[in-house]
Image (tube, rainbow, N blue to C red):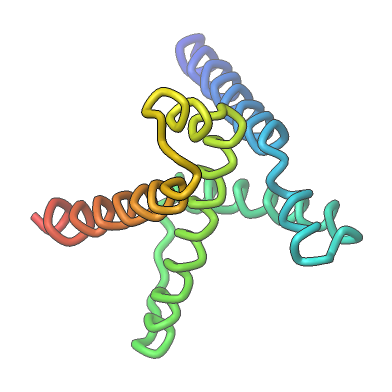
Length: 143
């Protein structure tokens, strides 16, 4: 009985730490306000936060309960655009993190890259991430 209670306390504590870290990460990167500013929907920032919180909670619950859906082939076609949208969001997070950590300016200064070549650096970084992800998904996860 005590072992079960201890496991529950540790699990809840771990979840609180991870949730707090995720919230702090999104707050420090200022992702939600930036996206609302770009899309001119500043009035919906609280709704965005609510949707993210509910989504994380729901996905966590569904993952823990091994929930599955029996979906048709037509609905499966929605997976492709959803994958692109998720990829765009992850790209936004990675770009925001790189901006916060000032990775690009440090790299430009250390490698003495001219202003004309910064665009090439950014495009090659994005293409490298995309190709690396595709290689992992197609070849490495397929086995």
